Image 1 (cartoon, rainbow, N blue to C red):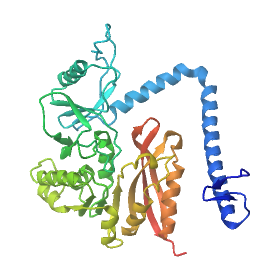
Image 2: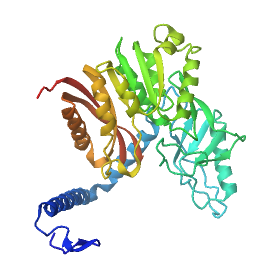
Image 3: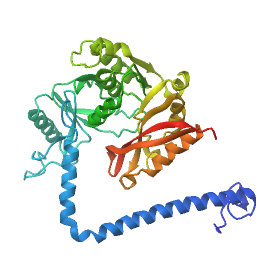
Image 4: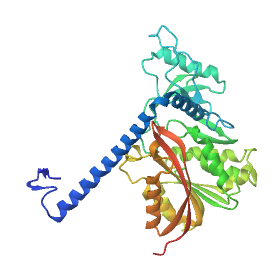
Length: 400
């Protein structure tokens, strides 16, 4: 704080040490910033020290880690197309290697009849990559083509883009569009221009099991619409509204809605036709559309918001979706519930205080009282970076 820093435009005026009101605020801001970083670093050091103290029990820790990996790989595997299929036991077809070894890729996602690798294996020749894809096809007869992602999901709609996927095996396709089953409900997925994760299948089933008869449900950031489709097909919700900005995802949802009418596995009253009539699709930016709904008109809001790149999470500098949350909360009835998705580091679990504070701050701003029902990990977005869901209920109006 005592360093003689100044701007090029005013070299004789210090930023932090002049003693006036502006520089005092600058100094307070800098001190707060430095202190936050110090606290965060000390917490990291404490976690490291604790881990080193348990180093002698490493063998037991390794066993638990392997168990966690196996649980993640089999998480939710059931009545849907497939997720995170294991590549254990496959051999390395790298031409540069004389000996066979396990592949560096441990798993892949299955969306419809497509296998999707998160990345291309490094130091593999084109022939070796093709052999890898053909091996995957041979192990699962339901898979017709194999793709690999070549770019990160950094766009606003979290999609790979037209050049973000490369086909490595199977009959050539001009467009990577497939239909995906999940617990008897089908959706349409354009893998190049939409975001869809089959690993969220158990979470989507859980959401549909929370919906009571006669509820009006709003799904924000609907994507290709599997959350909305599961709710409308499996519950007795009175109406389900799905908001999505990506026009490609909206078209996928419209096609899936038309397929609902012919779906004989739909368990809701009225069958597939009744489900189709109760699903309403709204295309556009959520911040523009949400104010058009009547206040207090929904019993439940589902908000699987996408990650806002590096500005999200525990080190992010963004608003953590507070603008969307502020626009959604007035639409809830008293005792209404929100399923709010956020991103957290592994050390923030199980309490996720940062997310709790964000939700509490927005509720206070809107004059609402709330209670947290449940906070849980629902997926992983990167190493030690998790997708979480916080379920909370509006318990009253804060008149103060």
